Length: 528
Image (tube, rainbow, N blue to C red):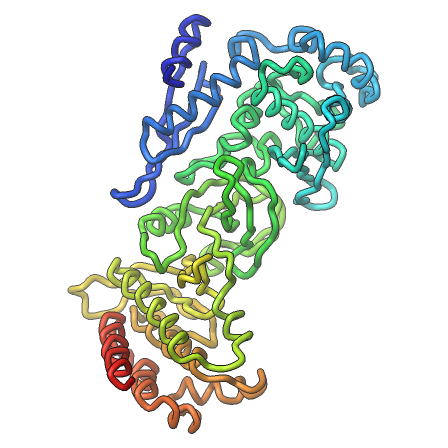
């Protein structure tokens, strides 16, 4: 039976009211990507993503049906208790395992709050001869109010992250999520206990910073959907209190930091929904400008540009600098952050490739440069400027295809009929690759051409040492090329000199540069 039909029939029998909400539609018209959230009685029970709205709804329905069947009660109909939520198998487990974790204070009763999920999971894995492991993922926040994140792994399968005020609480939540997922995946396995549908593992003094309030059951509902419902697709507003929110990386496991800088941090993370690695960029967000820029970037679609998939907001302890240091202030403590899910380029960046280059392969270097130019031509055709082109922002996908990334500084070009450049933030970019006019506020797309000229030099010329490069770099920026470079690359020198002109109007456009490279390639091919 069709999953959506089956789900609707189930809801009709239980007198429940389902609602499928289209959260976002991203990607180009020829390759769209839909995200749908499933609500029952105004509570979220699942997320589906697919190439059509119908496909996304089917996935959400399948997840929601499994969650409802496992829960066994209509949502919001009653607050589950330990007695009502446990099946006979778990009742016997609770007798031995739950009592091993006493109440935090004397006023708390022996309810589901004190079920030892770690003990239950370990006992289950012993019976099943499964390997189990708890892996600490991350820690956020100041010392007086930290948040720990942990993942439970069963037979090397990682389940959604658990969050807690300390490692013990995080592991307990991770164990709960693993048990819930295992039961959802194997509903007829009597050895896997049916645990409470809602996680109430911390309360009172134990959970001052991470407690789930009694009136916010929907906060935990993300766990029923495999830890993915917080990974929104269209930068939604966060409406819950920060202390109630799950990890901003809900739905992702195997998280590791790739880099950090003035515009935030970038993490490598495995999304459990599709079992693919992505790069997730986290930046502090203080006004609506971030949303507008991300929405614009989401429309950029080109083989030589890092693809943006989804974005969402979340509250997190962070002392990172703001999304735009010229626009937003930097304060410690709890901050609203923007998370951007992007294509992960597993073969590193051009900066590292150049550093490892032992000799110049002219054909390879020019091919890389040609791909960079292709990406810039597209960016400019969309009336945008990158403003921070440099080897560290150019990446290689698994097939070594060049990808331009770190588009956080991309800005709108001036209109075609305008004779003046837009008034912009001065000093925006990386100093060593910035065009001279970027020190001021009037500039346009020519700043990208200047940076490309410097990148082409690096692709064709080996500097002996860092000291040598530092000595030569200022001269090169002023069109004083090394004699050896001029002798080896006379045609390229002519092109580069025009790209590095102090007069922006004398630099070739990206389209003209592409034509020059094609002519050069044709000329070289006739030489052989």
